[in-house]
Length: 102
Image (cartoon, rainbow, N blue to C red; front, side):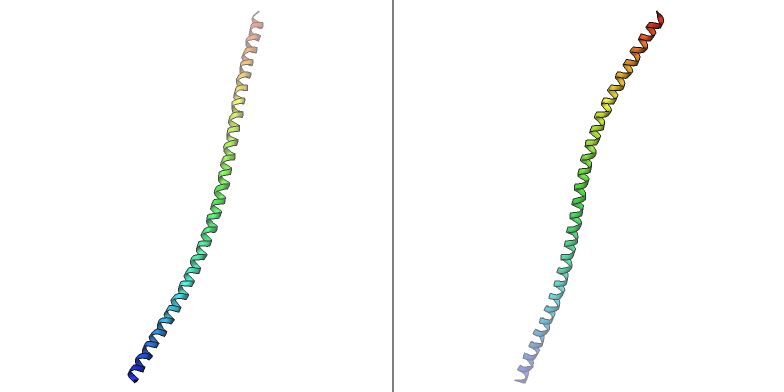
């Protein structure tokens, strides 16, 4: 019986050791899960910031494109006006030359 009691005691000690090991491993796992959750939250925050910046940049590019198109139109009108004024100057010079030559 002593041998059997000793065996039961050994078994009990092994079971208790296993339970302690499971508890330690469970705490480690919980700590790792918590750290992973914190990393995921930090990554989500960074992703949200990048998304906001991307949207702001997209809006800026659209605005710049619109301004560029407006400037191109204005430049076209300015070039047309300059050409017309140049033609008027040439016409006036011709008329002045004609008047001088009479």
